[in-house]
Image 1 (cartoon, one colour):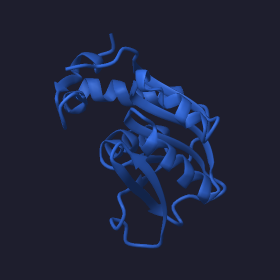
Image 2 (cartoon, rainbow, N blue to C red):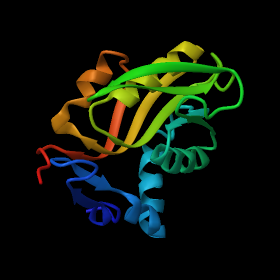
Image 3 (cartoon, rainbow, N blue to C red):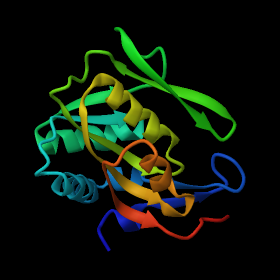
Image 4 (cartoon, helix red, strand yellow):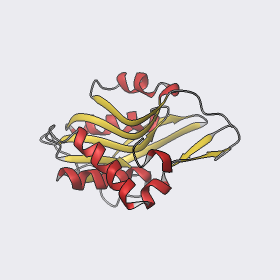
Length: 180
């Protein structure tokens, strides 16, 4: 077991009954575990020529910025609407009970960029596919998607595959449904 795996804390009935939230913050708080997590993600994509890492608000900022630093790449924050001060590209996505959207600065990525999308966790794939569409709209090349944890029982790879054939890599895949 990698040092960060044992530090992830399942929180039953959060943020609502029936959900088992996977709290990665104890792994972020442990210096050795956090370093191993970042190193493992960065090492997997080290030879792909990444120039920019895109990470979603908020935990994707934590992991994505650290991976970008390890890869010698820039970091592009993907934020909720209205949080970025200049002209943005916006992409909506479906949630269980409604819709939401993400934005990046319109000039953050160029067709010369090779992009890695990084997030702490992928569940249904909605946030991820919105990021994929933002990268595509910018004209940049999407080289891969990296996650600390994947809730594989929710089949996010099938949803992602509808948007891109870029490689999906997860450090931890949860195969069985998490129940309270």
